[in-house]
Each structure stands twice: as C-alpha cells, then as structure tokens.
Length: 379
Image (cartoon, rainbow, N blue to C red; front, side, top):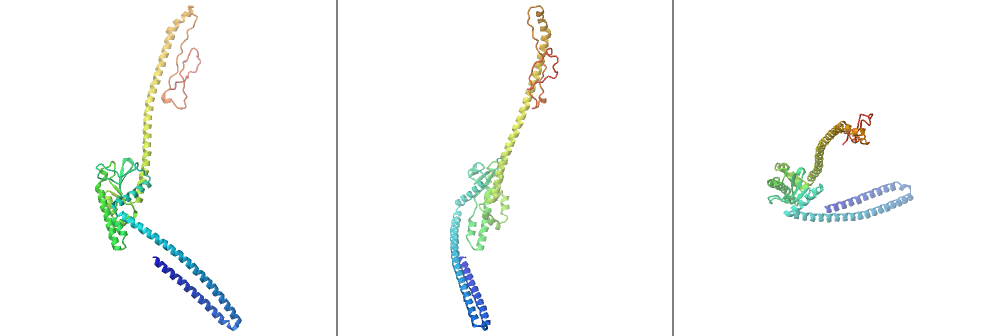
C-alpha cells in the first residue's frame, strides 16, 4: 500500500513537469511566431522580443525551482507520515495478535468476558453486591453463573459471559474467503452448542423468583453479527431454549431498565408504607373519637347528676338550714351551689375554627337575665 502511494506521487510529479514543459514550449512557439511576423518591422524590435523571452524564461525557472522545493518538502512530510502509519499498523498488528493468542485460552477468554460484563452493568448504574452479584454458587455447588442481577419484586436474572471465540479468531486470521466463511459457519455452530449447554443448566430452578431464561452475554457486537451472517435464525433458536443473546449495547439498555425498575420499586414501597400508615392513623383516630365521645357522654351524665344533687340540696337541705338564721342561731348565710348549664360539644360538630370553651357554673338566681345560649364544652 505504501509503495503504491510512492509510485503514484512520482507519476504526479512527472505529469506536472511534463505539463510545465508543454506550457513553456507553447509560450516559446507563440513568441517565435510573433517574432517572425514582426521581423519585417526591424531588427530593434526583435531584440526587444528576445529580452522579453529571456525574462519569461527566468520567471519560469524561478517557478520551477519553487515547485521543486515544495515537492521535496512535501515528499519528506509524506514519507514521515507513511512511516508513522507503518509503525502504528505494526504495533496494532502485534497487539491484535497478542490478544488473539490470549483469547484462545478458555480461562483468559472467560475472564475477559467477565470484565466486559462487569463494565456493562456498572455503566448501567448497578452496584456490586447490592443490585448484582458475581460468581454466585448455587445450592448444588456444581453450577456457578457469572452474574446474577436483582430485579424488582425479588426477581433475579442470570447472565453468562463464557462465549466460544476460537472459530471467530480463526476467521479473522485468514485472507482466504472460502476458509473464512467456513470458520464463520463453525463460529455460529459453536454459539448454538453453547446455547444448548446453557439451556440444559436451567439456572432458574435453583434461584428464587427467577424468570425462566438466562442471558448469554456476547462481549462484542461483531461476534454476534458474524454468527448471524451465516445463521440468521440463531436468536430465535436461543429464545426457544430460554436463552437471550445480548451484546454490550442491548445489555446496557436492559440493565438500565432494571435500574429504573429499582427506583420505581422503592417509590412504590414508600407509597405503600404511607398508605398503611394512613390506614393505621385513620383507625386510631376512629378509636380515639369513640373514646372521646364516651368521655363526653360521661361528662354530660355527671353534669346531670350534679344538677339533680344541687336541686335536692336546695329544696330539701338548705331550706331547713336557713331557719337557723331566722332563729338567730347564726348570722352566717349559707351559699347556694350553682347549677351547671353547659354541656359537652358533639364530636361531629367540632371544627378547627372553633375555640375551646370552659365548663363553668351558672347561678340562675344571681343572674336571671343571663343569655340562655351558654357555651359548650370543647375537649
């Protein structure tokens, strides 16, 4: 690629030199024709034309010198850029080869997939050991999913990140189209086999409140796209076996939805708690109102009994006792007890605007003109 670019640059410079030469020849031809036509006008005029031609040649030479200087500078910069590109390409090729070699090892590939999975769930806003757990050991101890995401309603989703990549790496390392197509078909078949393996594990039977599916996390979009190019029914095949294929893009969208679900679940729990507190408060207010009504009834009964006692005292006791004053036994006058005319206010009539009133006795004999509308008792 670099050699072809250098050859193209050389051809461009030859074309420019040829174009300048043709232009110079055309100028010389025009000047020669003009000089021939004006030769009859005198040798002096011919000398003037020759001087103009020399000046034009000098200017053309200066222009050619500038072009050559710019060409050399541009060619040096271009060569430096080509060398930088070659160095970057070599570095990238070595790193890609190292990564490809490392990913052929199952343990390295599994750890690499787990790191991509953890990064995806953290980008979705989930928190370790709160919204998700890694390497959860199930009851039987033989199965251990890579990630368990906590959903709303105490539900859980299992995510697996162990994806076979041997065939895909073989496809990227060859330039033969037929061989590459064969490797990609093998890559799709490996994914199908892995889907069957995940489906047979049935993680949902060992976890509480787990939907009957498991998410197969594919660490890169290109891995899944390459498999779908040769096996377009792979997604449907996995769905029929309770396996959902997810790439970083779709998994982040899924887990962000889960994170929003956590938020809405917390709000719903708070709303339910507020509703329960409201019900309890209403029940307690109802009971307190009943007790308060009983207190009011008891107070009214006590007032009635008090008034009956005052009437009996006035009619049967004090009348006889005042005769001691008439008989000059004593000069001290007996005070007459006052009857209580106030009653308790009904709880249903009580409003926040009403102010409290106090229970006080009323002496009808001492205040015969007092207003009949006496205040009531507020509790």
